[in-house]
Length: 93
Image 1 (cartoon, rainbow, N blue to C red):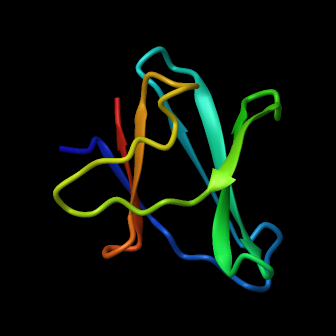
Image 2: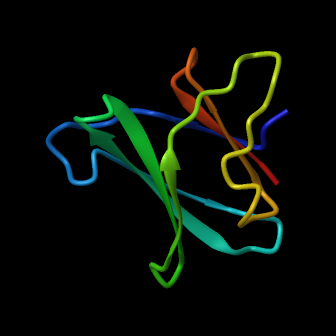
């Protein structure tokens, strides 16, 4: 069960269109932002630390209901899952 649900509500009039923050169990703060790529016709996810260093930039991959694809497994102890059906990020400490 996720600790936090972050609704994915991009705004085409903002740059980036979507931005949110989450923290891991150690209290490290991360900022996620998404960008639409016209050529690829898909969203891309950027993850930064509190010093605004880019830790990850990858396609935004949605997880089905019966399987979790952890988008931040290589950089954080917190699990970040994107549920495309719900249009929401799930964060688990």
